[in-house]
Image (tube, rainbow, N blue to C red):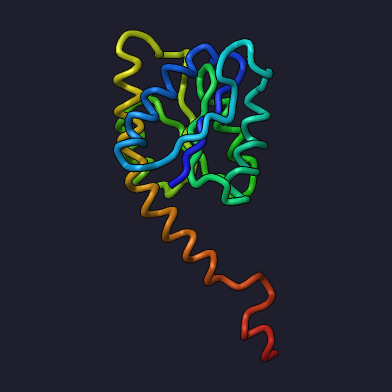
Length: 163
């Protein structure tokens, strides 16, 4: 499973922390991580609006299978990603959210809060968050991909051809 990390301008200074923890979990599973957003505050400026557009392009083109993103509260990135077709983004504050997201929502993106509640022990919290959805997301991405290959385009079913 290919994973994209996307950070926007208000939280770009935390990119190294998030990338380190995401890589620690992804490397154990053999998943590549692509740091496609802002890597620091001197990088090209992106807002959470840009994150939604980027996630849609990356997921729908099958360039990546899963997106990790966020902003100060995580709410802006969540809304920005979810307005795009083919993107199902969950909101995650703690590992329990990540577990439930992986078990129930069958999504392909997570939005995290990188300012609100991001304090002492944030690295551990982020690592535990990443440990929860990735195994389930892998299996679900594989099933979703197989299902999409089997599905016909709307209006092209055998029943509509017979009528």
